[in-house]
Image (cartoon, rainbow, N blue to C red; front, top):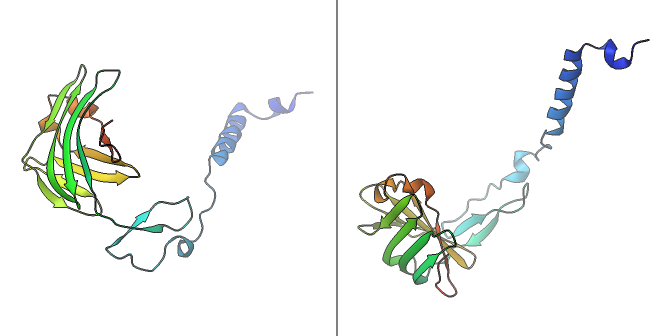
Length: 173
């Protein structure tokens, strides 16, 4: 007598295994849209902060950004950052940065920049399209870059990381 596996063609067994694997990857059902989104408008003075999946967003009051840094940081791989940043009440008083990326080149962020936004995060934009977003994350301030390849040596922008500043002591990482 043939074993049970030999009674079914191999293609059927493979299809059954594939169906079981796909079923194991299925997401659990999400609550109805009514439970996930509030109809109440969020005022300009309140931002949404993410909470646990499936729960409502909790409002977080906006506060002006204040940070001052004039620092240099070098990691063990030789990635070097120099930044001067002075923001008072979400108004940028000074900003310039230099980043040297080992084996890939460097990026220079020296004016001209125009401040285009104060909240929910500070944003600077240059005539060449380079955008600098500066936002608070707990005790850290993150300085991120978008569309700034023209301010870097060829290919270096692909390896550029955001600059992190510790608001408590003004040191960069």
